[in-house]
Length: 200
Ligand SMILES: [Ca+2]
Image (cartoon, rainbow, N blue to C red; front, side, top):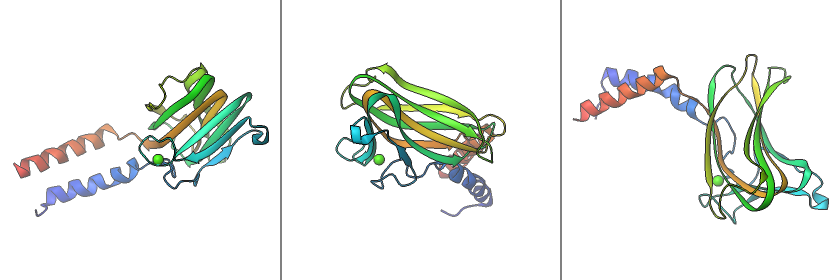
């Protein structure tokens, strides 16, 4: 099918959206099989109070994911990553997670906002479960999707996945992407209409 000028304009207009929608996190799906792009912080693993590791034995979609386990009410096992983030702009955070063998644990995600000099400004806390059993049954994965907006002055952010108390939790497909603006969505809609008309 030959593209007419209108379709080319649409194609070019929509191209930036594709790159904008690409995830801002490196290796958010952990499919490298390691923690490339991430850093980990586990307290006192010599005393078996917690650990963070890439795993393939219990999966969301058959691919590698990350496992955090904690046996400490004092320390939060943390899996984190920094990335550039614009202020006053809505972003979507999504991921899959699954808690196991939990009797009384706490798991959540912190998004820390910093300015261009990495001076801390504020943070957002997303609690997945707090001093209670995981909300899923064994073998079941839950999907989270939420929107957040960084305050004025934000230039950088740190995403921190945290586990504390007595729990084991798995994460996969952690993704942060910009929410498309309504004007861009409208353009995409028009593009879809134009394609449908043309093929009709
Ligand atoms: Ca994966």
